[in-house]
Length: 304
Image (cartoon, rainbow, N blue to C red; front, side):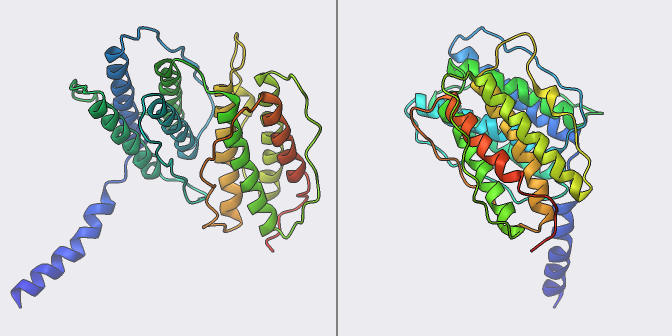
């Protein structure tokens, strides 16, 4: 009997122990800092001295934006694995939520750390990260900015930026999320893609994603959601790269999750990325343009 009571007390205590340690943005930032140090170790292994530029944004962000930036890093880790003869991994999606807790972003950082440890094992790297620093007073935008720096470091480690074929994977995922939303609203789309703008640079695709974000912002206004100025994500003083387009597409995906959550699309997870060959910026711009036309069909938000 005593053993039964003891076991019951343990089972009652265990969920509390698991759920009590909700991480703060500072805790998430600490994990991102650890990620940055792991990437530096791998760079030293390959004698890579180039340093990524800083591009910090000053805007109110959420853990959902950080989650998408972490997705971007995992995607680039996949490209690194491919370049070094390792098998590709599946980069996970997540449940649409109106309010994402820091725990979900924290879990994503742990996934990145695990994948970097696996890379170090394959590369026979034994150097370890020093005892991580303790950070306080951090907010989600600090987490995002440091992740942005790590993502740029991954481009350096990979020896190249992403290419339009990578960006199209994001554009397809955006289109599928919009299809989920239209279906939930009972809207049948008959719109067709716009004409392809042959020869457009990556900056043209980037501008189209900004236009897409304005449509998302309009729809969020119909719901009563606050939004932000998405133009702060535009790189200054340099040409826009496919990696920049991939990144701003991630912001669009983060914003679409809020609309999906409002529509109770709990199980409508953004599909896993599929890779496409021989893609050009005009292909990305055209597909994003199609997504814009589909969103323009939404004039009100009433659940079906």
